[in-house]
Length: 108
Image (cartoon, rainbow, N blue to C red):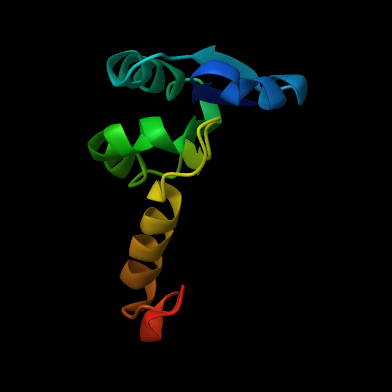
């Protein structure tokens, strides 16, 4: 497995990552992103994916997160943040700690 990183996204979302040396892969829809994620998971340790696409691939992302690699990180797209990354972080924290430490009390 390569130590290199990849990003899956649409449009201009991937350009900043590409400038930083991350291998960039364009995906205009969820099906293409799903195919790319499965393929890239075999060779990359860290895969960034825009959270608009990650939300649509939640079933696959959740299964992949059960393994140590690849590490999948949701990042905002050029359309902004969808809230998916924060939802997943909250779920993982609750699972690990058994309590909502991020948003208890209704404060966001």
